[in-house]
Image (cartoon, rainbow, N blue to C red; front, side, top):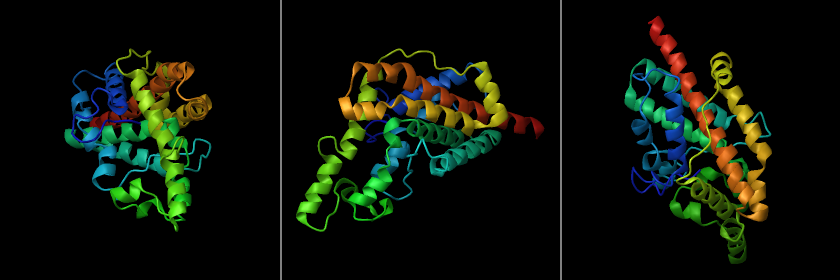
Length: 274
C-alpha cells in the first residue's frame, strides 16, 4: 500500500494510506484501552512509517533486509508474512512490558504495515514467482541495486525489451500494482470512512484465539471481493472505489486495531504478574 515518497520522515502524511490506516486504528484502539496507557501514541507510531518504515528500506538498500509483504490468500501454508507478523507482535508485547516506547512504536508501525500489505489485494499477486520468471530464474535477493529493481535482464536485447514491457508497460505487473495502490490513496484522501472499530465479540476472540485466526478471516473476505482482478480488467470503477472505501479500508483498519489490542492485553497481563 502507498506510504508516500519515502524521501523524508513526514512523507505520506496527506496521501499515505499506511499512515491513514495507522491513525484510524490508533484512534479506535483508544476506545478500548485506558487514556494513559503503555501503548505508543499516534505520533510515535507514524514516525516509523514512510522514510522510517518498510518502504523506506526498499529505497535505501534494495533486497537487503527488505520485508517481503506478499501472501497467497488461498494457501494456508504460505507462512512467511504470517511469521513476520507474529514476530512483530511478540516484539511489541516485550517492548510494552519493558515500557520501551520507541521500540514499541517501531514494532507497532511495522506490524501494522505488514498487516496492511497482507490485506492489500495487489499484494496477493505472486510477484516473487513472476520476477524469477522475468529474471531468468534469478531470485529476488539478487536485486541488490536500484538499477536491478528497475530494469529487468534478458539474454538478448529483444528479450530485455519484452521483459521490461511486461513489467513496466501498459497493464504490466508493476504498472498495475502501482496504479492500483495510487488509486486507493486517491479514493480515500480526505474522505470520512465508515466505522472501523472492532466489536466486542472480536475483542474477546482476539484475546482467546490470538491474532492470526482473525487475520486469516479478514484475508479471506478481502480476497472474495476480487478487487485487483476487477481493476486489471476494467480499471478504476465507481464500484471499486465504493468497495475500497466501505469494505477494504475498514477491514484493514479493524484488523490492525485488533493486533494492537491483542498485544496490549498480553503485555498488560504480563505486567500485572511481575
